[in-house]
Length: 297
Image 1 (tube, helix red, strand yellow):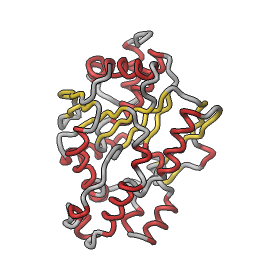
Image 2 (cartoon, one colour; image 1 turned 90 degrees about the horizontal axis):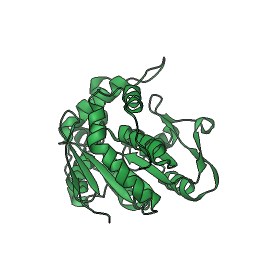
Image 3 (tube, helix red, strand yellow; image 1 turned 60 degrees about the vertical axis):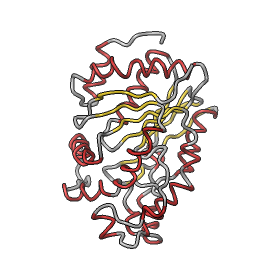
């Protein structure tokens, strides 16, 4: 990298993201080497899209923001950071889908509730188009996409795109595995398997063209699905509330997390062999080790 980043800048980042002071050691030990190696590959033209996958609450958005900061300030790279969450279908679109296919599709999150075409086009425009590209933003407090007048605007082309999402690079399951419900939500609200089969079909047919854009996949691997509810609860506590915002009770949150359980468990078992770099996390979201699957000369 061309420059080092000073501790004061990192401390400001940690404060802005409400992270523990110890996170600076995580940055120095784990993420500065990652940023250095990845920035070199970006500069060499070897990669253009960096994907970050992990369960809810694993730190994907934090790592994406950190890499954007490090790439920009230390390597003078022009980078755009996107979240798969920002490409959720609007609430009205999901309600129509729920009416047509299955009521559970009103809830954002699973494959089938994203605008894959918009996500794919936005990434391609950021990398190849000359001029301004509008970046959709989703307001989770209102459970709806922001109006286009409030979308971010980025001058293209950029050197690289960072894309983070809980189901990035996920693969569809064998249809026979869908027969038995995996939790109470599936058993009580999808007894015929209509919802989970639709989700699986979308994952098989619509998402591969988006996932194919990813040149390097980084996984933040939870020790198991049992951590997800607690991590998601911690996320909720960090959200700044406004009058009229929707707030989930603990029971509502537990039900919400169950929407993600099947694919999350599948990702935890299949993606470690597929990701280029896997950071092993413990229950406290601390990195305990790292495994590199693919080496780059």
